[in-house]
Image 1: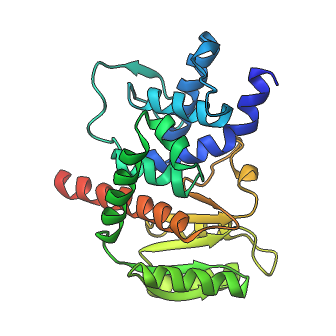
Image 2 (image 1 turned 90 degrees about the vertical axis):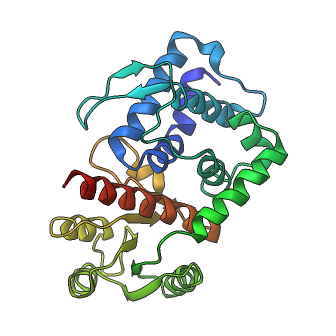
Length: 266
């Protein structure tokens, strides 16, 4: 398989991971673009010792830890720096946890990606677990038309210490519930029972108030094309509890930090 074919095969989920680390589409895509530029200049940078996918994530991690991006949604030029970013660096424990839970890598593969040993990866995962447990509980709105999936999500978020304010099966129900109860987090399917879109419902809600959103879909690659505004936090069906826990925590983490910066600025 050619280099371009390898990259094309794994690129959508690498972009998902990058967005989960950075908290938004533009920044995540900019880091992926920086990795691709480096790879085009020197294909030997791709270490396939643990497979092409792990090699791409390993190279991405090197870029993530060695460059700073300064850009906007329209442009994100790369600026080299001698220091690892301090202001927006996701802790290593969260990187390990996302690689294990969101991307489904083995401990051995994550150790390769992060240049650690398996024992260190286990310690990092334990640290991330403690961080997750310390996250501030919030009110959660679930937008999901499949009854059993909605029940699983409801049980999961309650076990994480959150409060479920309601389950919406349609665009109309989602708008009504969110406007009346103002959730602190939304978990949303993209295709709903009446043919409406959870993505459209969330975009409508975000015009009136700010809330972190995690989208859940069986077809994540359809929403990682780079052709339109896309979800920053995306989970694949079928999902594991740790996957939802990790991504929801990241969404709340960035929201909380954003509010803290706004409070200090004012």
